[in-house]
Length: 376
Image: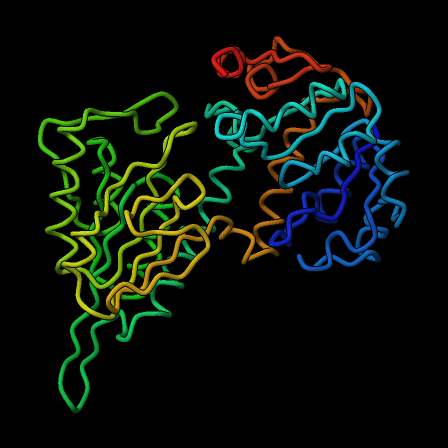
């Protein structure tokens, strides 16, 4: 199996899909790995590092594409690159099929097989391949650092000769992987932390990290795969009101609430922002899906009456070394499903492969994606 890794085509993407430590494992398993010149430089991996791990390095991108049995990428490759792949080539990447299903058209037109890493089932067996959790861990950590950097006050309580400085208060909205990592990071830095999630079951995890859990009474919105499910407007209004009251006493809010294939729910209203103290910050990790804060603008810094609001859409890429290492380990574990002794062997009786393959040889095979296409 010939595995190809290119430089990422997105302007703000400096991660790489495979790092040398993973190349060594794939080569040992009987695969051939070819890497485009300079693909890993921003992630701390030189061409020499890749060569020492057993990869071949080439600057001829078009030739690499034509050789590929499997193309590994962080994000969906450009359509121009997809058109150069031979038929039935397998592309493994974050494809956003539920949010941008129209972008799958290039896979269909070029008779390719598309593996969407977002669609890997969240099962115990698939934990080693859970790229969403890996990237969410990094985003949750970095969100706290961003929020702290912009705050005009320190996070921990400090007792000085000039008196005691009280700790900052941080509110984390959404207790998934990103939210829990944000809680843990804010706690380590000495903040007083509150966590909110519409899923009542998330309360135990929030409290275990030393944070207070803000809970809506008699509501549990646990959905498939552990994600929050959509709820009625009455419940959403109750959540917004609870968060509005909490926001008035909060220095930093980090929001992480998203539902795959849907617009992110608005949880921090303009009224809640108005209630916050001047100099407070909001880091909205749901920016790629519209944002949890009513005033967020994806990848733009908003200063609303002295409140700093930022909704980055690719925060994991700002820590490219560790993000690439985790992504690479996840995707390497997945590659073991694609081949036996280095030879391609797609076994759709495997629930992980079956669930993550959205297009096979130009045909949509995921039922949910089929429904989306049929309604357009």
